[in-house]
Length: 180
Image (cartoon, rainbow, N blue to C red; front, side, top):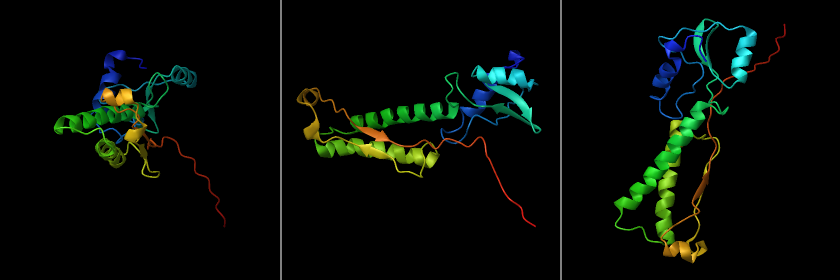
């Protein structure tokens, strides 16, 4: 949301953030070059945020975006990271299929697919898309568990993974006690 949409805050925001690697940055706390900050009353701020829009304000002397969410209510960096991971996994699997003379419909062939998924998930951990606090899990079904019709169609369903997004910290609470 902007009181002056002619400033094109969305273009400034996207230009700064989409050039970042997925997992490298949150979309909150960003300064938008060439964009005028809005001065909102408490009620206006609440109304805009309740409408699942973002604002560009000055807080404690810092011009910044807040909260960095999509209209759906999900954080933009999470959507960006998820879309990146989905696209790269599809590319990786396609690259393996096209680079090989053939990937056999065997457990060893399934291992080639698993290796591609694991390599991309390792990359996602290095980039900060997935957390390294908990290990991801990749599940690849045995060939014997595949349907005959799928084998005949050369279709290998059932490769899955679970992992935990790294996300970002936007708010902090600190409590302390000071004794004399």
